[in-house]
Length: 338
Image (tube, rainbow, N blue to C red; front, side):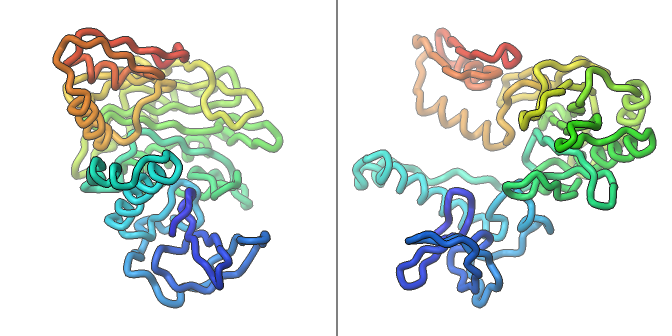
């Protein structure tokens, strides 16, 4: 089986082992690292017989990076696993009748292209053991940065932006944040993209109240050519967000606009949304549209209903349902989201 965090689950003589990077159907050699009475955590040493569902991950850092899981599993099998998980959770945890769930549950709706889909990415910035500036993602359950500017989940434009920011920091002697010493300036680089409009926002999260070389940074980022074979990406907003707290929270409470309007625009269906650095917006634009269309279909609104959207965030579901409802009320506690 596969566990909640994507780890393989196997048994030896009734004894359960949780093995990171093992795939359903693998026969593996594993080394026990931490043992309990009825189960143990083990490290994958060698794949003896690979699973028929095992594939070569698209990303070379898939095994060490904590950014995503189960890339070594064929996507069709990933979908089957997720569908089975929902089914069994409804029956086992939810207490629903198995036959009833089987009769009403519809097939999972997957993606045509399960990579390059994220419209938002947040990259921690730091220095490696050699003192070189790096950006990427944290290794699983650590704060060690895996240096990788070419994440396969985000858009291709992210790599050029990250490398330009790192080069700018090096050229201008701007230090990365050191969370142990609570010193250094740049903590994270946030990149948001409008998949419909092709607008791109870059926001630097800084350990300070202001950024020292605003004009120079804007000039460097605006000069970037981000077009690829499928998209004409263009940076339309550049911001900084001050976060001087000793915390794991990435963004500060507010942001300053260095260039542009402080937001980008994107669409879900025919509805346009303004997205600021602090807005919550579903990160998978393609699947969000499918999800909301299904929600709208299942709600079966006839134009006379009053709809309440609780924890509405930026109001993506609210406005989508407003196309068919009489009135929609969105309820939210975060002012920046509204």
